[in-house]
Amino acid sequence: MVISAGLKDCGTESRVDGDWLVYSNQLVLTNAEVPSSKGSLIVRWASTVIPIECHYKRKQTVSGEPLTPTWLPMTSTISVFGLLHFSLRTMTDGCPSPRSSSVYQQGEAVFLEASVEAPLHPPLTLYVDSCVATLKPDPLSLPSYKFITKHGCLMDSVLPGSSSKFLPRKQDNRLCFSFQAFHLNKETVEQMFISCHIRATLKQKSHSHLDKACFFNRPTFSWRATEGDDALCGCCASEDCSTGHTTQLNTEEKHEADTAVGPLHTLLRSHWTGHLSVNH
Image (tube, rainbow, N blue to C red; front, side, top):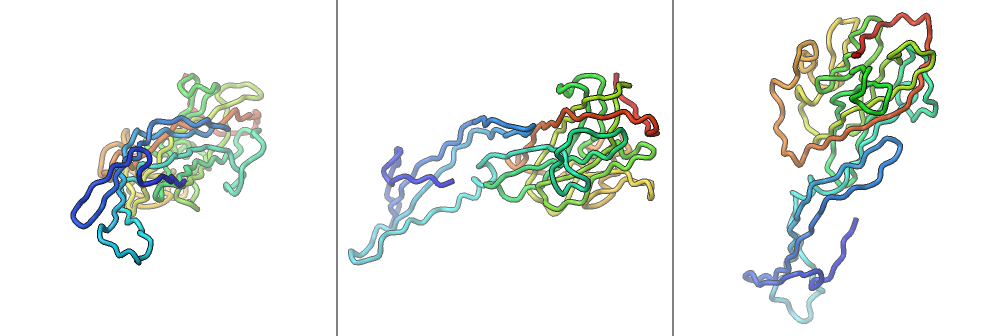
């Protein structure tokens, strides 16, 4: 996006600062709400005022080249400017492309991709904090099944016979995971909604107890991290993952949203032997 305005437009003020002629103004970003579609969300940013200054040398010869403004670096603007577009969608096996059908057999792998698009931001890394399955669009309705909790612990992967897991990342701003289609009641055909709280942070070299994607690896009978140190996943077997060392980030560098996909239709398959505990 390009904003073009004359030096004396929009209330620009001028002053002399030593050998420089300085024109100054402010770019004001206010709260905005953009329509969303297909279960995706557009996050609103906080109101922000960004100072802008244009500096000219006061002493120039008449035969000189046209004056070129020298823009002061505004490194603070890159972390607050622009919209974040979060989304959650169903994918084909392995997450190569979006899935056209919403029908699954009980026990079939459901692949979901969470993503964030932020063309005006520095590189972001996406995390899935939590996910819950419900029979209604309301994520607080009952019955429900919380299959991702504790800031990125895929609890469904602990169940006997489960193949649920986070897939290795192909892009930092996308994260794909799978779980087995299940029923919350005994209906032959059941519609289900998946609601997830997802979060984006500035790309970091290290991960933390809050910034992780963990699943239970049955062959090793241990929690594994999709990336980073597996030790970060140790809290998945405890009551809380909020404690421990975390990377301190400015609040302007953290963005989150609630996303949803559905309804998904699950067909009952009588010979499926998986087990599931739900909240009533």
